[in-house]
Length: 467
Ligand code: ARG
Image (tube, rainbow, N blue to C red):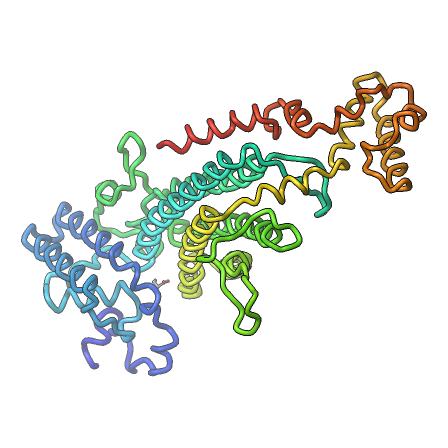
């Protein structure tokens, strides 16, 4: 190993790192995936070093050509990553220097500290974009489902007890609202990532005359007007892991959302509810019980949500209490981040696939929603409209429920005399309240589950998802 092994920082050392230390401290096994960003950062940095006279044009061109060749080898899986060089940065630099001697100048005025901060910001921009696309695809599936189930009514639940009727479309659109907010969260994270930390050095910049704006522009860290966006404090730029927390938080919140949807689907696809049939392609059977069809995709989505929360917790614990600025602990920030990014994107794809193939069992939904108790709250509204104070109306409707239970009849089948006996505000038309379609038609306000507002929301979503 000798000379070459210590090429990057070996000058002051008299002993080789212990084998177990190498295996313990390497990160290339998980940060090699940053190679394409590291190549871009190397190109930007060497172009800038040429601009300020530290590299000749010939040296820059040789480095760029070497980086292109290296990238091809990486894509073809031909570069053998070596734990003796710890991480992606040193592996690339070593491999490049073997081919291009001028690359010995590449690390001028730079540290792996600002390098990893820059690589990760490029990663976050891409990862947010990928998840945003997955969310958009899921939103389209939800809006299509809403379209398909405009005329299907189901009981809405609170406390997992039947509460009031809603259109199934309204239910799908409720999920769309959640995932729409997730999309905003990832967009915000991508915007926050769009600031270039390169030039911060190890923590206090450099005495060399860097052109930070040039590098930022080269890497696409620019605002809408094309102006370079630079971090404003070298120490913060190195120590800062807010983006990691924001991204992991966005993933954890999104996971919490898809976990709740998954739970609804598990319930709805059970024999007890039976509102939907999940597609076979997203379910599995039992190795023992031949009749079983298990909603594994949905259960795994619930499970993944726990993992995403754990990753966020790991990052909070990692960063909390760390002295400024860089500490090697921070290398541990990448596994949870990559895991959260990957698992969130894959989970959203699976959810979109499973939902788009799910069958709505309209007859079962209809039977469940015909339970007249779901409209007893509308009886309260009926009485209120006749001038009965709400509290009294609520009490009267409660009495109706009790009478029906005692008589063992559906609440709307109570004889009119008995109902009238409770309060004179009841007229013969009181049972009209139990007409479901009418009940839904009367829910006209913005955000309500009536056919009109639901149609308006479907149109609004369609428009929002066009781009
Ligand atoms: N692999 C390191 C990490 O991910 C890169 C930065 C190393 N910096 C250092 N001073 N050892 O954190």
